[in-house]
Structure formats: structure tokens, C-alpha cells
Length: 104
Image 1 (tube, rainbow, N blue to C red):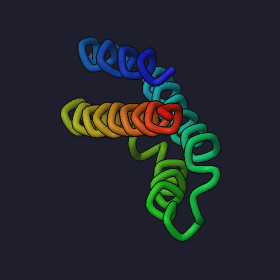
Image 2: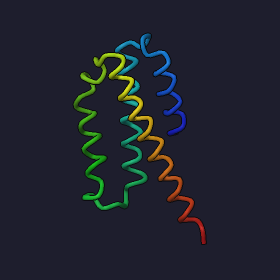
Image 3: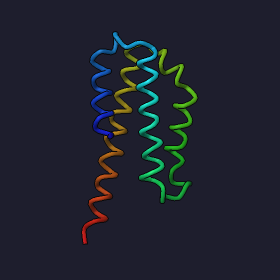
């Protein structure tokens, strides 16, 4: 799922000037869903005090969607680039943890 979202982010970056506000909002909501899924599924057994960073990020992005959507193209592109890197990193970490757990 993360790979599909990363591809979607990259495609959005290439056609950024053509994205409507609704398209931008939908993409940010998809990113939020991915972060929430990661928090719920991958970090479920991690103590809450160690997940403050992702909880704050989710809350911050959730409360600022209108501001993010209304950013200039260059600013929005930077936000997308950072989310792309974050999602790729989280996906890589979660796959690494799954592989190390299954090795006996």
C-alpha cells in the first residue's frame, strides 16, 4: 500500500500545477490514512510515550489540511517530498522488522 501511495505522490508532483484543491486535499487525506494505519498496525505494541511523534504529526496535519492544500505549488511540492520520504522510511522500517522477526 505504501508503494502505491509513494507512486501517487510522485505523479502528483509531476502534475502539480494541474491539481485542484480537491485533488490536493484527497492526497493529503490518503497520506494521513497511511500514517494512521502505520500507527495502528505497526506501532500498536509500542508504548504510547514512544509514539508521540507520529501522534503529533497526525494531529498537526489533520488540523492544517486547509492550509496545506492552499500552499503555493513549490511549498506543496516540498511537503509532498517530505511525506514521500517519511512513508518510504516507515515502510522500509516495518518490512525490516517483519523480516527480522521471522528469522529463527
